[in-house]
Length: 482
Image (cartoon, rainbow, N blue to C red):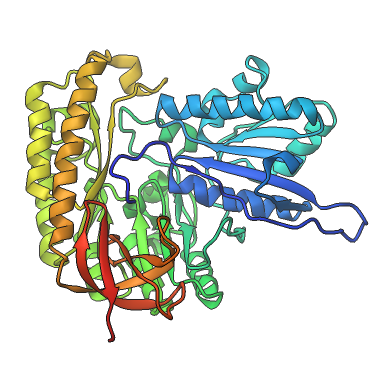
């Protein structure tokens, strides 16, 4: 989170596993898996590793020793897809020396391109969509038998609720728990509804059970994940859009996001709880009051806005306008004083004028976000915007506007961090600082990064840190006795 501009995030989501001998006497097969994009992909890769673990695959950080190489992909921007193609090209060079290696593409890019990567570009052996991971063992067998292996069927029920994820590359402190899959919002710029399907929620009891299990294993923080967590709705199964057809008994016992958040908070009172991602039109005051009520629910909300112009927001089909968003921000500030707020912002959307751009900057001035993820518009095939709107903003204009947005966010981030100087904050230690083994790295409840000198602490400890200095991305401090 330290970077203000989120490029496609590449996470080497593998854990080192020494070769073992199976009961059959065969060598354990090796899986190398890499993820690109959002936190949901990180979570999905852990599900994939769990499914394949039952087939005798251990994970490895060394791609060259792998029997099966999987890329869990993102389609949110063209640059992300091009990065994946470059990685696949490099993998195929290694495969020339090791022809028995299998290469597969998972996730959103697989769902969008389907068999093109297999048939036309000939970069992979298998293509697997986000709802077809249970079929991976069969697909591997199909490849071994010399046949094409593709499954990109989207499901109305799949939530992988019964799969116990293998925590890949885990620090043993923080973990992700998926609570919803898919999205119904149909923002005109977004491919997610086409690559992940319609929205459905996971049984709340399985979510609580997974969080309790993580706590019992020593984890100290969990992030509840979904494309839109605020619209979480469990009523006995099925798609959210079919809720009105449910029985009165099912409706009477339905569980929304606020109730789920409360269930988790009560089940693991010593564990920090975060969630991502929220959509403004679905965030109820009931959720804000639950956050304020429970100390272990972090005072932090990632609240994407995408534009400060109501005209552009309408073209994006965001479901809220500028005034409604600002009113929500006001309620967050009132109900949860000191709450950290971050954003997603897209500049250069079709027809965006300089006036629209200035409205985005003025919205940022109003909110003064702690940090954010900022992009210029990238047309994605098959979205409404790609089919119906001309990508008419010149690239140089997009880049200039993006620079102005980034510069303003850096200013606000620095201001926000300076306000911590002289204060004592509770920090969860996640590990050593990337810059120095002499320092710890952790985060406050507001999700702000803190670095401070090591003493006799250990990862997973909650400690009090006096903030002495800061940069736009990091708080610098010293531990103090409680």
